[in-house]
Length: 219
View 1: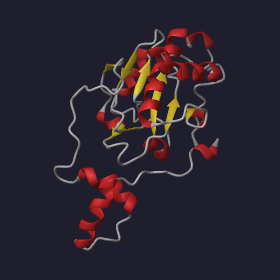
View 2: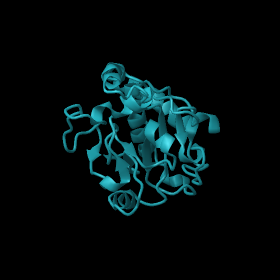
View 3: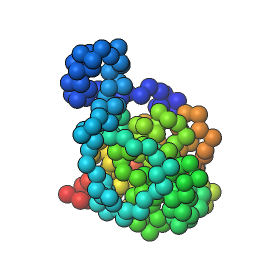
View 4: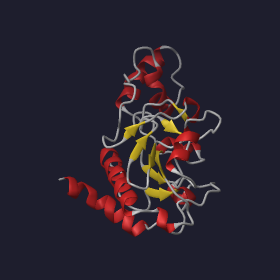
């Protein structure tokens, strides 16, 4: 699955093109266009306004991860979002929230899904969560954790599959991500990772079917 993670495929937006002329006047025209695309919003007065606790997925509940476990960004303007990465906690929902709030943990996902289908959002989608063990994949993806253990198929309940599928369908619709196994992947498939989740009991055919059907159910 290494071909799924090679290359950044970052978007160079209109703002980067507009900024390019001004940068050239200042004598720094050698700055790469992709660096401009990532940095424009850091200029004074350019950062997007944020509202504390604002949700990207309306059905979620907000509970914030530690600031040490993610990096401020302005996606998809600085990094294109084209992957969803599926994780399993190897523990409970409460455990996931606890460790993602711990500044010493060093990692967190954007979302955590409970066995009953309830979804917590811990990091804004425009920011880079440290969830995949790969800088490139972190920058281009949204991470979804699921309560449970990889060796216990009973942990992957119908309610969990349904709640997670609605979340992934929402994400894919907003960013134009194809609903397939190239773009919706497991943590185990991230190049260079030593993780095995979501494991052999995660039913990919069932899950992607639910993701594809979710928009129809809401129509």
